[in-house]
Image (cartoon, rainbow, N blue to C red; front, side, top):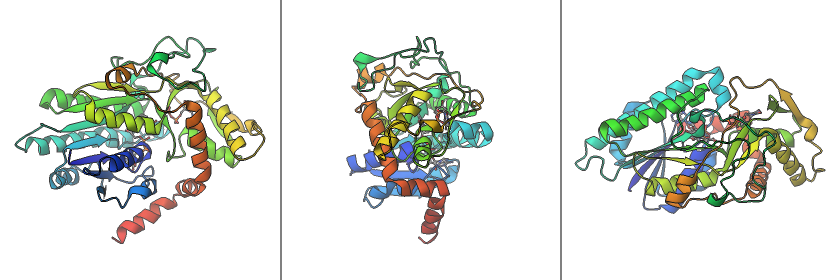
Length: 377
Ligand code: NAD
Ligand code: TYD
């Protein structure tokens, strides 16, 4: 492909995808379309911002005219759509913003691609619209075995170790959608629109549903970066409910590698689940984070366990997510590359070494910095 739009490229996962594509495909123009909401930060892409095949466009995906003109002017033949409002707690307070960006924004991307691609002589030939979604659209699984055995900390997940830790079920690609939060409801709706554009107009679409990501550049409102930062500064760690909810964690670069593989080799109109067979109760992961931060800071390991503070549970808090990614592993040969232990070590080290980044995003300074930079261009 000659020209690919990646939406939401200044966010957490998007910045890893942009970096991977800019480096791996020097002959392809990578156009990062991002509105730079509170979650978008161009500092996440400092290392590639001057690459000749990289272009940044500050735009709202809901702005149909701008998106459509960009597709025409840049002869875009591929779209990887990550831009979204992504935090469940925010969606509980402000569902409208989630419906606007996640549903209407996705529709605007789809309609612009449809009109542009259908205007070309080759139409949809060689084109691809790849929509990034979440496992949260499937709803919540039950915890049937609270004392379950999670994968050994040191074991790399692989297709031979598809481990069910706390229940008898996984989310598979055919699991019926049953979203509970305004966030997951908006993502489910956008997934339906993407599939409808394939079924109605023949657009070559792909949807993937991934489990919780962790790693560098995640906005510190999400569990892992928020808690690393709080442990460092010895601030209380607000654990929702009893901390028994289960999430299935994947290192963000492994997600980016899966996106690359599926974008290039995935079957059109198909769906792939992405996850690392790595279920953890929140409270267990929090204890690991405390010990890791303590050790890396030269504190006594575990001395900050007293920061754990149980607070009122999140409304409608989904109990358990667990992804079955065997289809992706079998059909396209993808596997997570990191052991969870390595991923957590690397992640904690990154946040501790990048306090400036954390300070700038927690203070909001990054927004004024880039606002000024763009105003001066
Ligand atoms: P993020 O919140 O870190 O980044 C979202 C990006 O989208 C930001 O750069 C933001 O500025 C941009 N954006 C928001 N509204 C926009 C708009 N109207 N127009 C243009 N840009 C806009 O999110 P993330 O965690 O990187 O998630 C990226 C995608 O992956 C989302 O679609 C999310 O649903 C999905 N996903 C996330 C996870 C996870 O664990 N974080 C897991 C599975 C799927
Ligand atoms: P989060 O990172 O917000 O991701 P998601 O809700 O999309 O899974 O939260 C991960 C888990 O951690 C979830 O069960 C909620 C819990 N959590 C807390 O207990 N305290 C917190 O301050 C946050 C942000 C999350």
